[in-house]
Length: 401
Ligand code: PMP
Image (cartoon, rainbow, N blue to C red; front, side):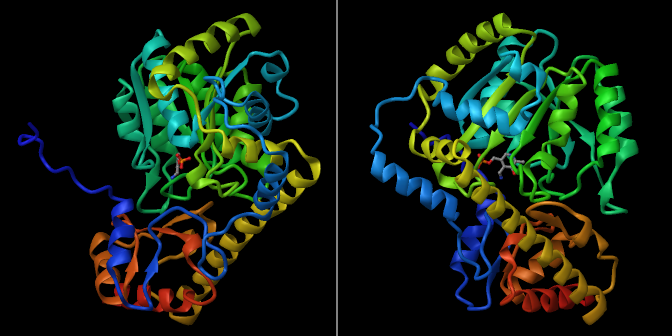
């Protein structure tokens, strides 16, 4: 029956981890996967999460099905975290929100909802480059995927002129995907002034802004600051779509906790949109998993746990920033590695786009047991005091050839 099914290519990101696992060298480093590691290179379960789970073992909630759109207290609090207490549409009851299977599920619900109900276009513009899963998610949702310029290889920074030109040239009312903060894979974000300009262009061209916020708190250590773009767009009157993930900022990766929301015109429109969200979700997976949502809800709903969580997010962000500074110092001052490395310090969030080319990343894997995606993206969280020097000298050797 399946003799005509061709073998598919391995996932470009998860494939890196497979190669890493097969490597027996004790010096090996995995900088491929986007999951936080503590100062000892170990996965990190936040203390606020552990406390929330302890509370749940005491209160012993049942395991009944959640409603189709998930745990209502959680989605309310997730929306509050993203949109802020001053959000007009949120306070007017005009934001339709559903729980989702983490950020990926939120993007997929959004894609499917837009493909079915957005009346003006079936075209979505993604930044080039973007997270590798964006294209298949939106293509499989039934949208046509196109790109807008984002990253400038020469400056290893934002191609703001290219971005503006491409958004201005996009057909009116096209959908445009924006990374709210900590752009993956480049680590390059627009400044607040640039965001304001992007908002103006989106308005001029009547584009539909779809924000992917997978790293709220992870970029700057401040959840409100990282929500700047989302909140600015909403304050400017844009009716946005928003995908939220709690994988990174709460370390809930495998629990699959997220939310998808749409800003609507008013409470009546919200109710209609809500009803159609349910119709999109019900045949996909019926209703979302409960445990992670209970954990996130316990943290978001309790002042002491919330404060502890915010300081833990900041702790993760700060550790990553300190690794950026160390790596920059080693490459530029200690090793005098040829090239300009300022971007290592200026890039934001979990990842750095090093500028290493595919040949160099291959040498790093084969000779130094250092694994990263072929585009030269490294997860800064994979670096720590024990391995950063080995990493820097390996990069230096690969660049000097
Ligand atoms: N969007 C972006 C930009 C991401 O980097 C990720 C995680 N790698 C996601 C969405 C979704 O991740 P998850 O489904 O684990 O929340």
